[in-house]
Image 1 (cartoon, rainbow, N blue to C red):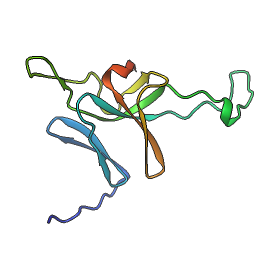
Image 2: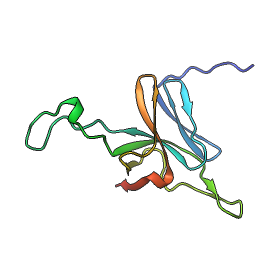
Image 3: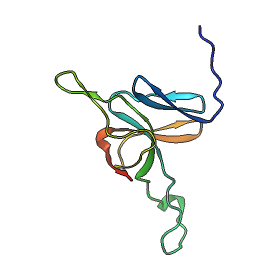
Length: 121
């Protein structure tokens, strides 16, 4: 059995076998295939005119930051197709796409690469 390493920072970036991942408070998330882990932006609590929204009337966010990226899926010839986004990219994704997960009281989305519409530059 190997020794456990302590993590000094809450979020550390790693590059292991071309797979991008982050350690999130001691837990590594490594998505499989063409899946991507995204941390959604906070929902808007105030309208442009200055009115505050109740929790029930806030829209689900469609923007977030890429936290981890899978290696990509395979084509018909067995070659891996890399994913178009990288860790740290700000992305726009489908409103109802993906699977919501909770890690250490933080919420994340696991999306397929096809569910990401654009990278915000």
